[in-house]
Image 1 (cartoon, one colour):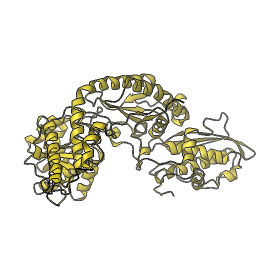
Image 2 (cartoon, each protein chain N blue to C red):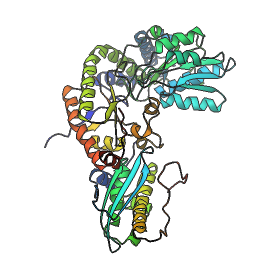
Image 3 (cartoon, helix red, strand yellow):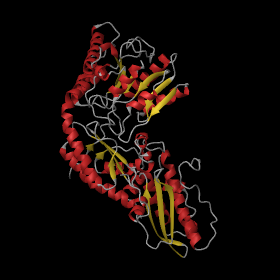
Length: 399
Length: 146
């Protein structure tokens, strides 16, 4: 019997822990179990491991070691950066600027701050998915205390002009935070080069485990403490350090950054995938600009079908992928990102995200290109919308 | 969280029964809308008030396809009067359950059947003496279906 095919094309959702990362973590789960706050030798080993990891991550991002704070996730880092800066700055003002296409960890944090009385401006994006720097500039006010736009979008992979936006914010002395969870390890990221005051990253997008992230806080940036406790993370985030995961994060980041040149091969594969799908599937389009975009990301809209069914049928064919369809979530709203780039709701339902990695092969792309078009044809055969369209009863098209 | 579908839901999604259109259907019922992400269209062939054939087309998620498939199975061969007694709960039970976020799919299936029978009543000059339920628009009725 043929071995069941499995192609993982959902690397923007999460990645596996690779053996090189697991290997450096394991000693800190077993023999080197000391609490970094203790004084004896095995504890000193733990403390040294944490500080070496911090120094490594700082070096890789162009930061100073005392500007890196470990968190339990990218979402935690997003929450901390935004609420921390908002609460530290609330005596100066209560206005925050962000974009409509941020991750929910940012958008829901904004909703929470709105309930506290903060005012939030959500900037739209153009059809490519990009924030307009002039619109950003115009949104800043005398009472703006924080501006934040993500570095790369998690659904459509477009890369925002963060360097330019941060410079504009700084003209007004407004601190700038970027959620770089999707970008770090996938494109070169240097905090000094970008000019950001805070930056969030996550381990599990780059082959470290789930449950570890980090926040860069530039020295001098005012942020309230996240967890009061035993003085860990320079008293800003208490709690005994997750030593093994911190060590794993540093190793994973080092490996991911070393692999960035290899991602040009992934970009070529991705471009072949995009061309192949758009050619084979009528009434389809790529969501978001092809460039500037993460080399691994492709996101399509397929008219007349709904994404959940597509993802389930792809799974049966051995392909793991994601959709921005409402039916993939508990809410009845389709992806806010696809709506923000101007896709009508009925077309946002039929979206598919394929996110590749350095492990994706030519044969994987061939297989995806072989499987996707007939599955879409099958769903369209079942779709009353497609039936009406072929009868000429409706004429809408997404192009 | 990922939707956890029963084996029956997955079977009716992957191998839907009665997909297609009926030429010269005696009645057609369509509910839902594309903006919400679910449209169900049911075609009936009716002889002497007995549903002798039924087909469907659905734009929607796995649960929408599975509930359409199951609803068509449950009314095939029944009298229109019996078909009117089909409830969304019966569809859910026949599918061994649905995740809470997908209950509305079973409601749509029930209402697609009612809409088709209403069409049959209209065509045969009968008074529609039953409730059509909501119109399938996700926000318009505001009721929570269970």
